[in-house]
Length: 121
Image (cartoon, rainbow, N blue to C red; front, top):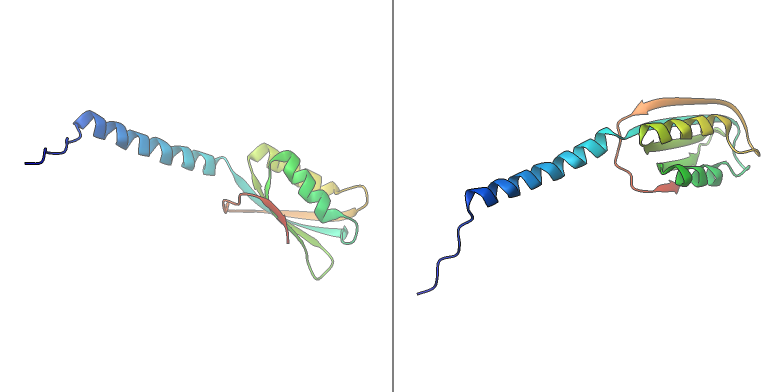
């Protein structure tokens, strides 16, 4: 006759449940600590290295998201990260690289999407 598999005891089950809860809480805390802004930048921002400069600044700050040229000549940056680096990124977008001239940069809040990298699109 085959031996009966060992039944988990109550303490082991409680420990596993606590580990699952802690992992879920850690993910929720990380998501809660992230913010997202969609920034539309107008001025002389195309053909001046704005997108590659944005990528490099985002990487320096640990920001994820995208940056792209729009057909009206503006640039849109969809940026996500921790609140302080994100605020620094938005401030940088309002100035841009030395080769650009930023006339305006309007930022709006959006729900974080959980991006994992920064891309030029």
